[in-house]
Amino acid sequence: MDRNGKRSYTENNMELPNFRRGIELTSIELNKLSAAIRAASITSVVGGTLTRTPGGTTLIVNDQVRGGSTEGGVSRCPFAVSDVSTSSTLKIEIAWGLIWNMLPTGMFPDNKPPLRMDVTETCYVYSKIQFSTSTLLPTNISFSIESELVENTETIQYNLIAVVTIKEDVEPKSITSIKNICQQPFPSPCSLR
Image (cartoon, rainbow, N blue to C red):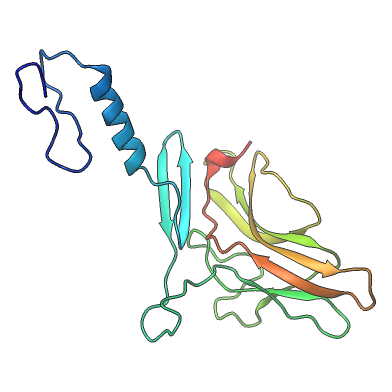
């Protein structure tokens, strides 16, 4: 209730205060508004990515499999990495896809041949988005295999695609697990150093 005995909040579940000219704001009203904003903010996304920056929040929802699925609509994992090793070589295959409507280097429009890369040790698979220093637009997109976690540079944004674990203490070596991150890489020049 306000000073005049009238209800000062909207008639919804969040109990937001109504602010009017000439009426003093109280800490209780401001705290209720703050609590309502916190309660309504998005904190995570199932089947997509959430990115918060000083400029705002970006919500990207991944494509979903629709209809006919017995798994209730399983989302497709962008750039899923799979084991395609041969008897003599450890190899991974990266599923076909576009990043910012660009086809990464090594991928072909009809996915023939598929993008395959050799691995020799436990490693991290990254997409690399290179930016123009003058326009801050992506100029080249590719994939790389790194033995350690890497950080973005002034011109390259690294997006972790998968972690490949290799059992190295036996011969022949073998890929024991692949943990796909399943997030669509998106160019963000704000993430550069």
